[in-house]
Length: 399
Image (cartoon, rainbow, N blue to C red; front, side, top):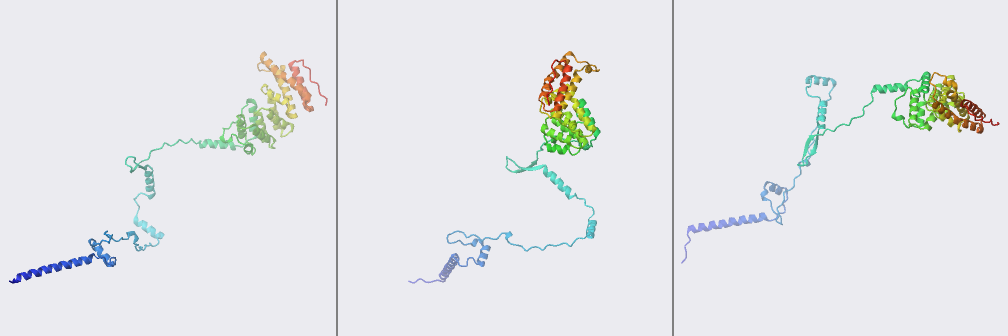
């Protein structure tokens, strides 16, 4: 028996098939959508992916496709803005502009820069050891070293004035007389560090340029203190005595008189022997040689008479020994207002001259110079008479 088809059943079948068709079409579209496309990177597709990020497809390996890289903002070169060049400002325009502005009440820029620099100089950036961060703190004050006090300008000016002072002939003669009487140098200049251990050339430039009493005294003082060698000293002093200027000769005589020695005696005796200089210069040289009649300088005369000195120096030494004996041993010496020497002092004086009898006797025998023989015999006779010795006089050697 056949079943009758009712209208309600037909409607149900149509809806079912319609639903199946819709599902099939949706699945087909979805399948087509998932298939790889050849135009995946065309501008339209990229624009669509940018607008719909959720629709980004995966590649064949199942990895999510990365969005395209975009250029940084700095890579896009902007069009340069045209510079505005102001019109040239004339002097009249500047005056008008300043008049409109009026006086400025702001701080000067130079003052601001100084204040900022001063403020920055008090602070420093350091690393905090606990936190490791950079912090700003005040600089530690460092104690400044005390600089040596500079000499007062007035004192320096006085020293320069003293050095540049013109030396006169009278000043030099007074200095020689003062030195022979007291043994001191006057005036005595202050010591300079640059003078010590200078070479002969340095001292020649300093002393031989023009007569300078202060520098000569400095030179003598340095020699006394062993800051100038004997070689340098006597080389320079010898040049001073040989100089044609009278003032320079007298400065050389002053240097020899202030430093008694066989070489000093020889230099002054050489000046007298050459008959060099004027009468005043010769008189000062004689005054220096006469200072060797003192008992304290008998040792210098002894070294000269024992040999090795030029004949003119030996003759002068014999004459000064004779004069010294007459001064210190004769009866005229005791008649002076000064106190008479004690017996012990007289004995010391006698012993001091006694040794010269043998020296003079030997000198008269061995010296080849006639002037030396004559001076030695004369001095020997004077000493023998003053000492009251029974020693016979030396025989005169045949010429």
